[in-house]
Image (cartoon, rainbow, N blue to C red; front, side):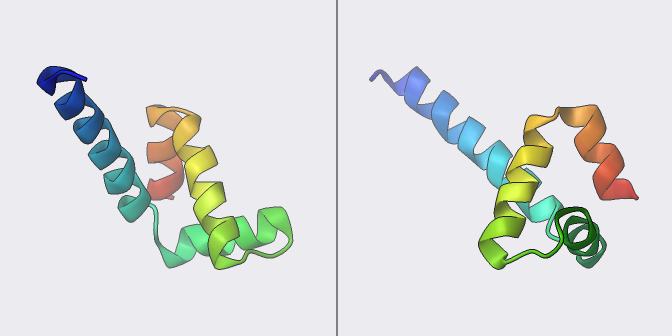
Length: 65
């Protein structure tokens, strides 16, 4: 792997972790709990990963609410 590709991967991973951190809120946890009938720590991580995968607009609206 060349350096440019390596740093692109690092940047993409950082972007994911930044969004995971932004979405680690009590209101979002409560929403995930209600939507899914309960949430474990891992389940909440999976929910946030799914939410991120829905795209910027949906993610940002969900985190803002």
